[in-house]
Length: 230
Figure: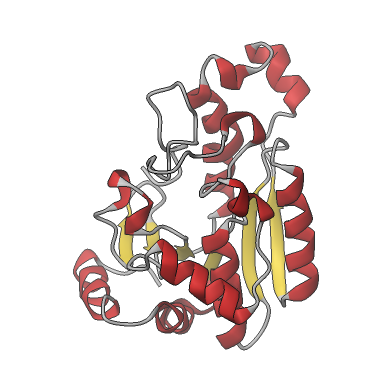
């Protein structure tokens, strides 16, 4: 079911006053089997998987964009979540292997043109991951940085022609951590080593106290987003 812009705005205002688990439940009810949950296995994503599997009638459709250069801790968590929760995990990979990308664009593309690297290994795979769906669930929160402060619980995704659901949009870091710990949700140990946002191993570093939460992504470049949410 593709919603008209005025209906999206209406639901966004209504959902602004719901708790994240209530937004997840409302979204699953509204979109049925035409909704999928995006997961890079960060703290937000494991919380969403826990919420969704707690209210869904059957296995939850979850996809991950496996760039082939995720942290070992991320891959380990991926397997643990698949064994813990009733999810149908779709691993979406780039069209080019790392060797093919190096042959076409040179070695270590991420050190020279991270925008192109993200386009090849994340943005294009996302388009394929969303084909056939009416909505996708993301872990976007306003507290993640200046680029996300205008996010709403439900948005129109113009690029992909569907709806984007952001259940955690109002939560602070403290609220997110409180939920994960109180519910015993498995999470990436890198979060406790200074990594609030975890992406590919070559383009993610730990964040110093007081830095913007997105400062650890693509350090040294004027880049704060991979292009998935632009």
